[in-house]
Length: 142
Ligand code: RB5
Image (cartoon, rainbow, N blue to C red; front, top):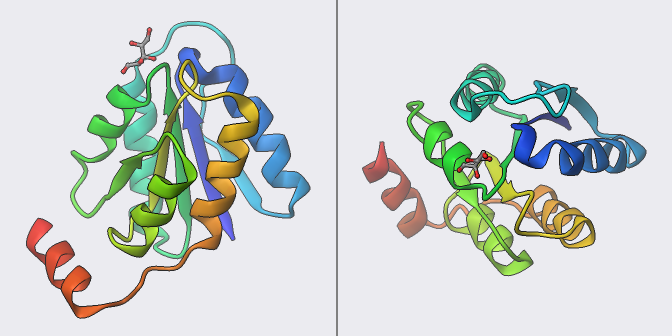
């Protein structure tokens, strides 16, 4: 599976850890920045990843900033994108089963690295339920 990953400086270290972790699991990981601890604007990173997802619907995205809030709000401004801010595995499972989220968002100053790995594992391994009621609600979002 192709994964597009991105963060601002608030989650740069977490992105680096998660990138190596996912590459170790044989995911194809494209790093959309940032590439250092220098300050960047999280909406720019969110837009880059969101556009990649829209052009490659089989792929998944992982976006992180300090809290995960700014980058998730930004990604959700891109039509067609469902980006879910998750702080535990239950939210990650529901984000996939109920919301068919294509992008997982997390906060680098909120979750520890082990929890972030576990949240990402659940997100990437859970399929959309495909139930009519969830499909209807997603269509209404659009
Ligand atoms: C940057 O300091 C911080 O505002 C950003 O990482 C994020 O938490 C915004 O929602």
